[in-house]
Image (cartoon, rainbow over all chains, first blue to last red; front, side, top):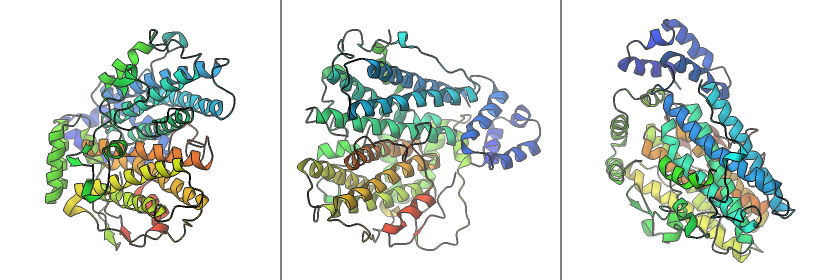
Length: 278
Length: 233
């Protein structure tokens, strides 16, 4: 990232940018040199505070990123609380590899909550906070046995992970203003996909024979109740290119849909997760 | 979300070899004059010092797409070769899902080839002599290397992309690579889908620069690749 380029571009639309930021061009150049030496993880903090200070809360520069990260944080809270309660539910998850994997995933989601809280705080914004009582993982009775029936629990877990992947994918373009925050979000996005793959393998091993580590068509292997999380995944044309049998290779419609995961909008995601709030 | 129309226009531009200017124009069009996202374009000026030789991946978004195309060439060829003579003891389930992965990687490779059209790098000469294709352990270890590397490559490339449509496309592919990586890892050792060899202490996957990725991949690629014109930030 070339900080001076960024400042120069902003100056074209906001001639006051130097005064807002610091008032001294030389100081910014020093910051630029300095930023090359600090740990990458610290960069969002430094940039965040600088622009936040300059433009105030809710400016177009930082407001979108704050909002997007708080949206991601909300989803991580849902997942985190879901696995915390699942792992703590006596008799739900058989001891062995399944319990190990779900404990690992629980810990990852907790770590994501903490990471996003720190990132949002470092930008000068306020992270949202949720507690266990904020959630209803039966989704108003739709999954009434979610914490007593292991297969229901895994079905909801799969849906959360696949939906999480689609949510991060859909928000990536909102984070392009910050290389470091975009990269961090991408680095979470692929972890959610690893989780989804493993949960799907667990379901497959328990008899959901049509479920693979990847999403085929728009099939959930669960039922109509979660269909909103899978609609649109059956796309077989990318950027105007038909993937089925592309360039003479035998690529089925199923494989073409599996090869590309599809994003969902924030509104779509919110509609999906709203029933899970108490 | 990008519309189908804009994607199709991009594709036409790619085949005309005018991708860079159109990407820029589209990019600015998305943003409007005062948008904060404008800073991304400014931050992505490439390094013009190019004394390297070899196949030039190109610059800007075309360079990044060619970089992805190179990686998908490796993966697709690797999984295709597995099926020339599957390792002994391959199960029906493994064969089916590894066949799926082969098809996904071919789909990725051919997508990039088609999208890049006249700007695409040629087919690479690959070298899989370090892999024992009759050994399950050797094949799965290589698969794990390729899939984990692919995840870190796409994660690291995201910030180098200026056209939002291409960022979304990279996102559509990287999560599938992560699904592959988790499956292969679980085949090697159940439960290792996202262990500490892949994730950092915050449970985030890692991101690698193109130079780091291409260095790690160079064992498998005979064709010399020149990444010196790729954007670096």
